[in-house]
Length: 593
Ligand code: ARG
Image 1: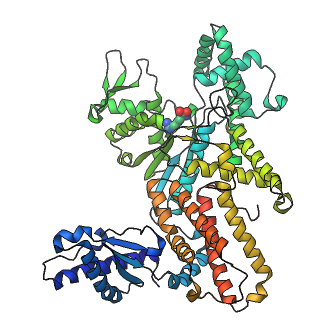
Image 2 (image 1 turned 45 degrees about the vertical axis):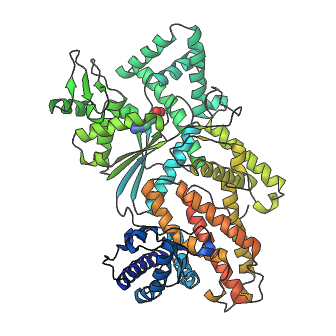
Image 3 (image 1 turned 30 degrees about the vertical axis):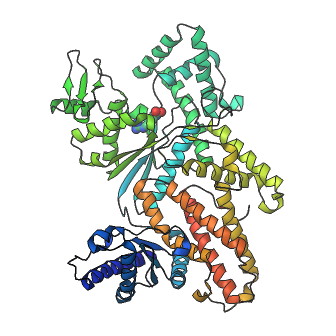
């Protein structure tokens, strides 16, 4: 039995042949159109079938109305389809040739495939064997993660999983900004106000502990005119390798990095490799000097080195200051080259906020000018800002939303919902379940919108058990799981029952079969576009369709055991696809909720 993608291809061929035959019968000279170039739309309503070929583009050629063409082409297509082995029905509907697949007959083969491939169902070979490096998160060690990082992390982790599902060999990397004046400010404030204190002594998470000193520095510096100069002095000492300064720097960075690591564990984020700016910040200098010798860059009178960006309609940009120090751009040039040396990727994706579009445009251009062929495959996965609704909780600093606070708030809202629904007894560990629900809410809400768009994160809306939310989708999986448990308990009743396609009669069943069969295509599309919202939209469609089906039809309680078994098998297929899609967008699967 051909699958849904093959079936679509076969039907395109059949309609192309039918157009040709129709032209022949009218004695028109007409080349058989390339089937791939035929437009095949999705009919506005599922009742109208699965494909709609508009006939408008051929009106000029045939010199008749699209309606007349549709009717003639539909007639011819009955034969051409049979000749090509395209199964289903075809009919004219106004100016369209509509095709209805024989979805019921595809079902047994499809379900067999889903059950045997299980977690692997949906995988494609779009990027088979390709080495793709993806950089995301990139925190600074002077403060904890904020809401913007949560969007970054959700995107980075989800895109990594999607790329893996498309066959890529993925390497997730982080770049920790652990040096510079901002770190020295926290260090200075700690030396002045915090001697002897530690996260342990204060019972405080390390990143919050350090972040508090950064905040302290900023208010202190308003009254203390020497603060800024003292921070600079600390940076100079750090750069000179002063043992005491380096020791304090190490201690405070350890506190922050451990704290951030805890947040990563809570959100299910992980990395294959971590780069530290303290190790890479002078990288790039030699590459820039090489480029200078090769005439890619030029030197100003004061000794600074520049790149002229006229080719990409931009101004000039400095790469090495007159004192020989590097800049953000220089560091990224060096880091990219070093990474390619560490692990020769085919592509490198940077998940970084849209504010840095200019930076990446310049970076990619410079790397190309330096002659690296892999520079053609660098990609800035740029994402928009994320804010809370007006008047909602902000962090201590008052400007950004703290990640840990938000995660805790979501968990406690989920726990409250579980209690309101009286589900404590059923879910077992309330706290654990609430954390998983909170994470579903967070990831789904952050990923359901296209990365490029700015967004408002509404915690209350995200945690709702109804509507287009993570918890709603998670609940669908739990509902089906509970149904399967009941089935297992009663399995004796269903001995010998089989999946019978002739019992597939409802429009929702057809839609579910179609959706299940389309999952690999959606995974490929999300991979090609680096866009998890393709998966979230799909998940919502699948869940909503199943919910309607489940609402209107009995699944297990049918006298006809084959009917019950057929419907249950379809539900089991939906569950497998839900689980696979959950994984791609960071929704934890819950057996019970
Ligand atoms: N840490 C930087 C920031 O906070 C982001 C680094 C992005 N990655 C890069 N390779 N430039 O803005």
